[in-house]
Image (cartoon, rainbow, N blue to C red):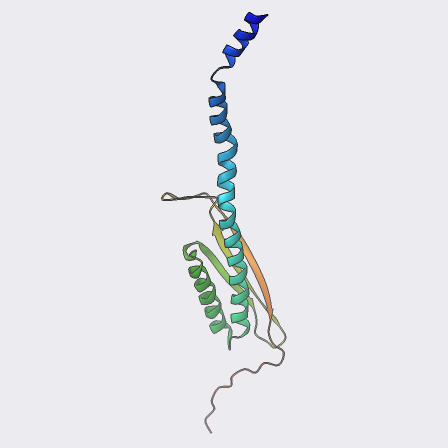
Length: 149
């Protein structure tokens, strides 16, 4: 009996190091990478929502649709640049008209990297869109063109 127990103990010698390495590589490393990437994903989602809100507001306050679309794109681009993701701003779309009481809608699409490896770059990715609707004031006044007379 003593010989069997000693032989069993000798067979297990050295396996803890292998199990520790596998445990860290298979379990801890992927979880750590996911925990490090979640703030990036949340930041980009928040930035897209803010950009959509401000773009819709810029369009609703504009004097005409052409100026409104330009202002909406400029505001969304500025917000993306302030968050350091100007290159990942995929699209800014504004729809609706500026009639009193109507609604304008802005949609901002941002690319989110699946994995961001420092000094290497992004690997994979997906896009997320945020939409915001903004009412046009029922009692707003539009500028009138100067008439000769």
